[in-house]
Image (cartoon, rainbow, N blue to C red; front, side):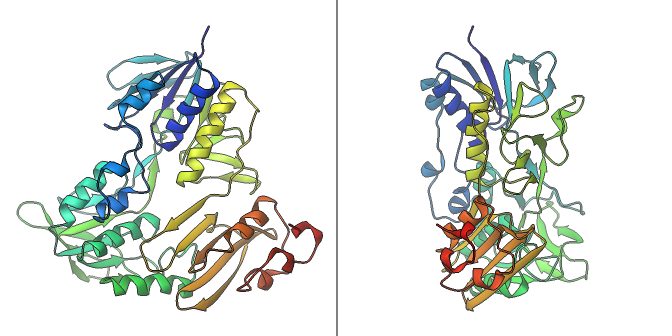
Length: 413
């Protein structure tokens, strides 16, 4: 008998898993269930659409014929509300049950809501889906003033959107630096200055106490905890994700912030796997649990999960993720886990060139490069091979760093 595979989620993790399953098992029954109303699109490029730099067409990756051609059943606008690991079924919001032999949970997350007065007013946006990008683009094109909240990678996308649409903006940050868990104030200042040049002003030690609205419940003003007021007929909020673990309630699938998996993307149930940013996977490089929602990581996890659904133990997930920002005149790239580590080293080479490496137990676990991305391959190699760089921090941030600058045969190319 042919195997029955059910995938919950049609992001890059779920779609990559479906593609791999079809290659590995031509006769299998494959079903993808997603609560979104459209097939897979490029989540990385939706910011370029909202900035007015790309039309809709290049954003879409799959149309419904892609699934038909591969004999994959695609269930759009369908929310899974219950999982029965013992009965090997999942149940949708309309009561439909789907039987499975193997289940993949690629269920992602939803944007965290700001718990303040009027945070649901018209004109306040979160940025996660293609439909969010459409709504943002439609609104920002007619806006006069903006406020962005959330000093992370999605927040800076929102700030860049307001800049590209030439809307004056304030970027409210709780600390003294953008992405302060990965960048020092010196490194972040390169980003701050680039924002100022684009008429987006960073406001530090700030946040939102409440929003004010007009008689039509449209946002007009953001008021911070200090009492400072900022005009805003457009507001973008990106303060994190709530991972969609609520459907695990009533099951014994192990999870915390995300679903626990091993290095083969399997949960504590032999027939249930997980992939994408919902996972807290066993990171073979860190030697610890990790969570990473980067596009490349999610795609690889989907592929690896599918291979192990067919033949468990056939391939492990070992990956150094990357995330790039292309909003400015200089490149920006983070890799690995730049917010982790018990030590770090950084160096600034010019007004637009800086790098920082996060180190744990003498080994590189992540980093950020601004301006010159050429060392990334060398740093990733050291990270993948878990080379001990103890006592050689300053060597690592030489501007023209080469692997053979390090002492010891372990660093040989």
